Length: 359
Image 1 (cartoon, rainbow, N blue to C red):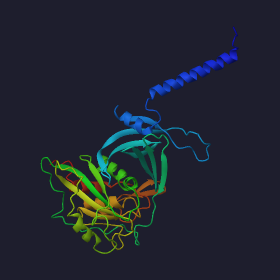
Image 2: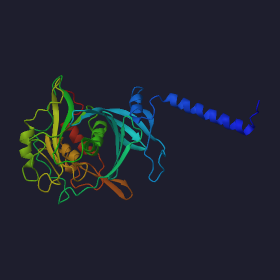
Image 3: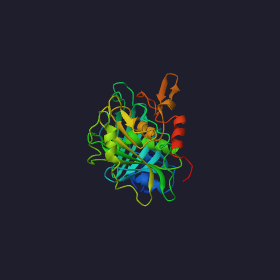
Image 4: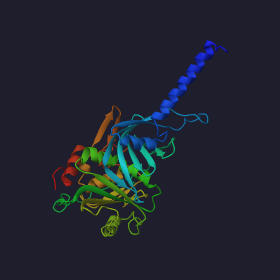
C-alpha cells in the first residue's frame, strides 16, 4: 500500500473541502445565478430583503472574467403601479442598489433598476435566464428647455371652479391616475420614458406628497388624434384638449369610478408652445403638454401645476458648500433638479387633492 506524503494529503483535503463548500453553496441557492428569479423568490419571504446581483466584467478584463456581485436591498413594494403602452402592468419597488437609492421596475421577464446621480441616469437591466445585466449611463443635461430657458408661464387660476378635485363618492377611487400620451415623434421606448420622467416621481409622490393614496402612471402610444397632433404654436394645448376629453381609456379599471385623472402629452420638440417647454390648462387643472428634450422634471412640473403647485412656492436649495438644486416647480430650467416639490407646494397639492380628508 502506497503511503501519501503529507503535502499531497493536505492538498487533497483542501480540494475536498472546497468542493463540499461549493456544493453547499449551490444547494442553498437553488435558483442559480438568475437575478430576476432571486428577486422574485425573496419577495415571498417578506421585505426588506437583500440579494447579490451579477455585474458585467470591467472594461479591459479577460474573456470569462467575473465581476464582484452588487448588493440589491429591496426595502418595500410601492402601492402605486404603472401600465405600459402594450398593456403590461409593472410593479415598483423602493430599493438600494450598489449603495445608491433607486427604483426597481419589475415587468414581464425584466427587472430594471434606475437611479439618478446629478445629471446622469444609471440603469441596470436584468432579464430572466441571464445573469449579467445591461448597464446604461445616460446624461440628462439635454438642451435648454426653450429659447428663454423658462419652462413655462404660470397657467391661469380658477379658484371658484377648480379649487380642489371633486369629492369621491363612496366606492369611488381617490387614487391619482396619470395618462401619459407619448407623441409619435418620441423615439425613446416605454422603459426609458418611464424611468427618466416617472419612476422617481411616483416614488416621491407616494412617500412625501400623497401618502394616503396610490399614484398610477399609464403610458399610451399610437392613438390617432391623441399622439400625433402638431404643436409648437399658440393654442396647441387647447386643440389637443378637445381630443383628449373625448377619449375613454379601455384599460383603466371600471369596477370603481375614478375622480382624479391627469392627462399629459410628451413630445420630442423643445417647445410645446412658443417659448414654453411645457404648459398646463389651469392651476389646478387636468391637462398638460411637456417636452422631453430638456430637464427630466418638465412633466412633473406641468402635472404639479394641474395639482395646484406654483412657481412662487418653488425653492433653490443648498446641498453643499458650492452646490444647489432646484425644486420641481422652479420656473427656470434647473441645472440640477432636486426631484422634489417644496414643502409649500406639497401643501398646495394636498389641498387640491383633499389629502387625508376622506371621501
